[in-house]
Image 1 (cartoon, rainbow, N blue to C red):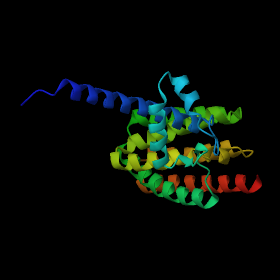
Image 2 (cartoon, helix red, strand yellow; image 1 turned 180 degrees about the horizontal axis):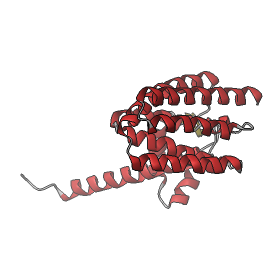
Image 3 (cartoon, helix red, strand yellow; image 1 turned 30 degrees about the horizontal axis):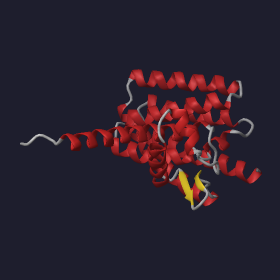
Image 4 (cartoon, rainbow, N blue to C red; image 1 turned 90 degrees about the vertical axis):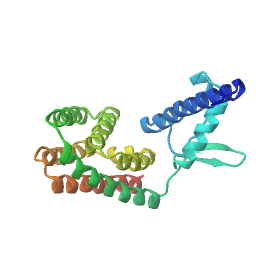
Length: 229
């Protein structure tokens, strides 16, 4: 086998480095949306983001194109790239898909849950109770994401995880709103408790139902917050 020409090898290295930088930027933008730093309708400032990360604008543009395909961003001719604004119908359809996927995650998680993973879930539920008592929305939201991410990992199905993550990234565009109403944090965590109870019994059907209902009730809270706005 003949060795790879130096110029070709350099090109491959540059491509790999570009892909790595693009991935970093993608994760940064997605994280900014998840944390609320970027909201629906906000414009992505490519120059500012490139400076913030200490890179050129090329990987930023590539990351934005990738996030457009993922449904998080939208490009407007002669205006730039913006965080996607979803309609109420978009949100409803997304929650329907999320509910179905979450139900399957619950069933599989009940089968695969270990004493160690259940202990971690219990600690997260307790921590969310404290955040709810303090009306700490940001703290609660972060713990809530950890709880559902751990459920996905416990379910131990890579294809399901890929589908779920694709959907959940889009729900970050509006998901926090459903937790803003008075008492919603406590109500949401009571639903987490019901999920955990089913998992501790290794009751797949009950875990599936608890997660499906949790997502449906989350949609109801979100729809109420949008209507009240």
